[in-house]
Image 1 (cartoon, rainbow, N blue to C red):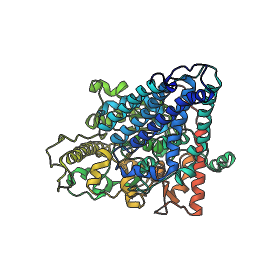
Image 2: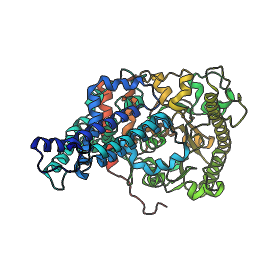
Image 3: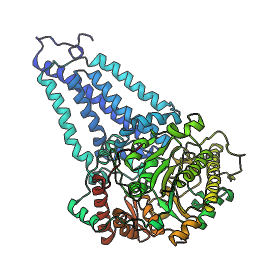
Image 4: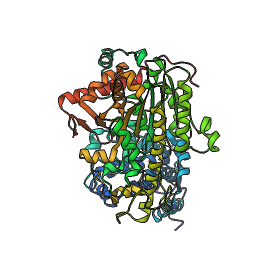
Length: 626
């Protein structure tokens, strides 16, 4: 067999031309075949913990197969031409294809969140975050690694040919790989193709579930398609002059000196009111503090863009007024910058690490003068560990009183950590089993533990909220408190607890959309602030996106605010929810995927305003942002 000419690393000059051609093409055959295998494994990884039926859509849609397998084959051809080795080409293609696929696979299990191109900008954070999870090993992953090893060894035996350096055959192979990738690019990035012929939602539980939408396209295809979201492209029909004209209709309005009350914003990690989901068996005492506070303030539903992860989307939508976010690499227009122009001291706290979502840099870009993390504050009290709410709220109140005593109005926005999952499934923490939730048999013991531990965390947070609001209620300094949750909590792999409880997550209805993406917000003011502002801060607030929450805060305070906020008030009044993952809106209180002409025009203006604002910083930055 070793004398068989196709298995030779070199070919004798006396061989006939047909053997020469076949000998050169032989390794290409194995390169293509082995890379197709990698693409198919990636497709199997794409569904993660979801039912295998989701993968059935791949085989029913040839275009999906082409768009998932084609880039892998093109990459393998390119590597073969560059490195002149079938086995090296295979190994490099496997490392890239299966490496990213495995990241996606684990991310689905841990966070019910797919891997997107923009996540590559947070690789350092991803590595740090892995410390919160234990990587598992299963038969599928074992077979995947076995496939790579076996095929690599086969290629060492069956495809030993190496094109000569500078040969035309090598150049043609490199050119073929590049050309194939270039030809694929328009299809990979096409939005109409992604939503139309290349989509197969037949096996989805809900067409509006963002994660399922993503994995219904496979992995390689939607991952490459997400590159379009990793760069800031202008919206359709964008006209810079028109966007500037829209913004120039308004001027930043100063907050009257006599109305400069302190503003304290707190985003509560994974905080949601589960009693609104209709879950039976929850002890009413768990949420009693929150319900009492809602009765004293303005509360409403906040429809976020995220589920169980992606915290900073809600956070930064609130701080910027944008529904569509991009990476922050320099000073960016935001409401903290506006407060600074009004003479406010602008600070915040996050009792976790400063690398978390790159907050140490991004928060400076968003205008915070100081931000306190484990590294520069909380670590002194925790021995370098993250701080939970019993410590966090004490220091938030202490810092607030210290800063307000300085005389300048104070804007502070903080993000808690305590509610961060995953929640233990093998022990019952916080209190005895059955304290927070009475299981009627709907949940397994491990699922009950997850829910119990989450509710225990909520009960603890609410006691700290009571401590804070009791103190602020008696404080002579006027303060407006803004509380909201960033997203629903992680409730087991794939949201298993929610599923076992029968929670309606059909985002095709307003109830389902609210259940899946919704949290609550609360705007509360002490008596001193009510007196200064002449407002009662009472009632049910509108259902809104996080990008409109600051609009509602300013409206409740009676402030006009910055030009951008004024320009977006009309949008909020008509289209109060812009849910990016599903493409759904709430217009005049009704869920829709097709806006009225007036609503569509407002959204076009809103998108244009965002794009212009993201690219044109309006405030004079101070040099020292320590």
